[in-house]
Every structure is written in structure tokens, then in C-alpha cells.
Image (cartoon, rainbow, N blue to C red; front, top):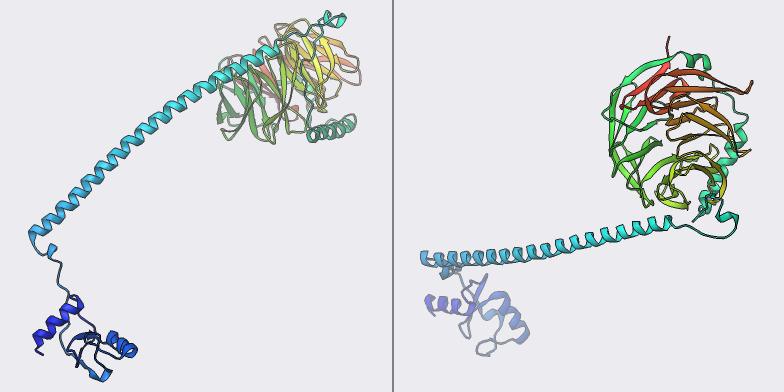
Length: 486
């Protein structure tokens, strides 16, 4: 058999691929892969071509150069390469067209989704408006009935909700702890005296951007103050450096503010109560159908009271930032304060009444009749006195909770808009557009005196640390710190 015939036969039978170890059969002359023909012989013992008996000794190993598979004919010339490139280009163009088609379809779907979202937002806004209108209508319902109870004009509780058992137990524990130690509590060392208050003067004056500001809240350590109103922004000032350290943006006109564990709590005209930390809102609570006009912190530190013009007050749990109780009355509420022991919550109304509620049950425990819309309330730390101010009047009334009566009326001589007791219950600061006044009650002689008065037009006032200072918010937005002058 010639070499050419062997090669042709080899290529033909192996389909153009060179065997690793080619061998030829002595019986048929055909070329095989050694490992494959040996496996066949061991199983059948014959030549796979002619069927004759065949053994391994009949195989002849061929010594030839290894054949390399030739390049596919489609890539061996310029025209064939151009055809390949044309096919690739057509594929890319087709893919681009498909991508553009998918993009157009996605845009159409997105447009439809946006229209649906806009419609959903409109529906939610309409439903929310209807809900608020329903709440407002509910709060304005009058309950009619026969007898003297229907004609004497006393405030009636329209709706009440008791506190959850866990929070009610906390209120009881705080009351028990504070009420048992209140009477025995001595005046702390280095506390202000009537003599030191007589020497108070303006030690620091901070110009703010809040003209006509009405909201002032001083931190427990006396280092910082929240200044806000009547707009939707509040600034936190460092009273020592006289610089703004933080800013907070409310969802409406700011109506009141306070400090809670180093965080700022702000009520606004939309009925919401927002909590800020480092200038960032961390929570918002909303239950009022109208503006929330005042807030106060319970002595336990985890309960917040909010009053609104929707004739209700709401208690919020600050651990969950949820409303846990809402009590409705028959008058718009203007202000509210917790009793120092935490078991009572007093609210002032636009009709002039002061109502005192049980915090746990929402029951009305007492009512005091005033002569006009109540602007400010302040409980004394002695646990029995409540100071009140009526809008546009120059008097401060002192009410005794034990006697349910007015025991003292102080005529300041100028309109009063803000009152606040100090921690010991000795000093009562009153501020208004005409002056800032400090009243002193001497328990030993059971008498009142006026150790300080200064012509500072003010809208709010707060005590500083140890009553060694008095922080005053002027009607022009200026924050003044009054301290004893050397």
C-alpha cells in the first residue's frame, strides 16, 4: 500500500483529524487509532472492516507526520472575512434596534406608572382631607341633654381613652416616687436667692433671625436653647458661644418646642409633632385634626402631651412614637402642662376654662373658670399650685388644686404672655411685651415679694441652671441671658 493511499484512507476515515497513535491492519489495510482498535479487538477479535480474525500482533504502527486541521475555508480569504464582518454588523444593528424598542416600551410603562402614582397621591390627599374634615366636625359636635348639666356651661368630655396598662403603671410609679420625696426636698446648694435675683442684668444678648419669635426652650443643663416661630424653621443656639449649632425644618409653622434626652421636639400648625436629633428628623407623630399648639414632657421622660385647636389633647409614647391616648373636650385648647408628679394634665381653653385631667383614665378631675382665653399654664414644684395667664391681661392667677379655687392674683402692670416656676417653687418668672418680672414666695412668712423687674419686651422666658440665670426671648427675636452682676 502506497503512502499516498494510506494518507488518503487515514484522512477519509478519521474525518480530517490526525490520530494520536495511528496503526494499520494487516488483514484489511485500514488505518485506526491504536487505543480504539485494541479495545475493539479485545472485545470482538475481528477486523471491524472485513470481519476477519485480527489480533494485536496484526497491527502495524505507522510513522507519519502529524496532520494539522486546516483553517475553515470561510476565513481564508478577504471576501469571506468581509462576509463575516457584514454578518456581525447586521447582528449588532438588529440588537440595537431591539434595545431601542425595549427602551421605548419601558418608557411607556414608566409613564403609565407615574400617571397612576399621581392619581393615587391625589386620591390619598382627598381622603386625608375628608378624614381631617370629619375629625374637625366630630370635635365640634355638641352633646345636648336635660337638666342643669346641659345648661351650666361646664366643659364636658366628649371622648376619652385610658392609657395602656404598662404606661399607666409607669405613671403610678413616677407619681409614687416624686410625691413621697417632694415635701422633704431641700433647696439645692448654690441656688438663687432673692438677693441675687435683685442684681440680675443682661449678661449675654444674641441676635437671631427669628423676628417675632414666640417659642423658647432651654436645655436641662442651661447650655442650649431652641428658638423658633412664627415660621417653619428652628435654630438651636449655644448660649455660651452665641452660635447656631443646629437647625430644624418643620412641616408647618412651629407652635411650641421642648428638649427630650438631648433631642428637640417641635409641634407645628399641621397637627404634627416632630422629633429631631443633630438637625435630622428621626420621628413624626400626628393625631390632631388641626394645629398642635402646645406640648409638654411627662416627668417619666417617655410620655409627651400635645394639645390642639381640635378640642383634644393627645398623649404620645416616645419609645414607640405612637399616640396612646386622645381625650376630647368641648373647647379649643390653647396650652397644656403636666403636674410635677405626672398624674395630672392641665389644659387651658379658648373659652377661659382650665381643665385638669387624670393622665391614666382621661377623666376630668377639676375645672377652673377664667375670664378669657388661657395663654399659659405653669405648675409649681410644691405640687399644689397652678399659675395661669389669660391672653391680653396683665394678671397672673395662682390656683390651689386642694381647694379648687383661686388664692392669689398678681397684677404685673403689663400684659403677660409667659410664666414659669423654678425647680424649688420659690420663684415665678413672668414675661410680656412690657417687662420681665420675678415674683418670690417666702414659705416661712407666707408672703410674696418682687425681687426683680426689668423693662425687656419679651414673648417667652425660661430658667437657666440652678436658677442662676434667666433666658428671655425678646419680641424682636433677641435672646438675652440675665445673670447676677458683680
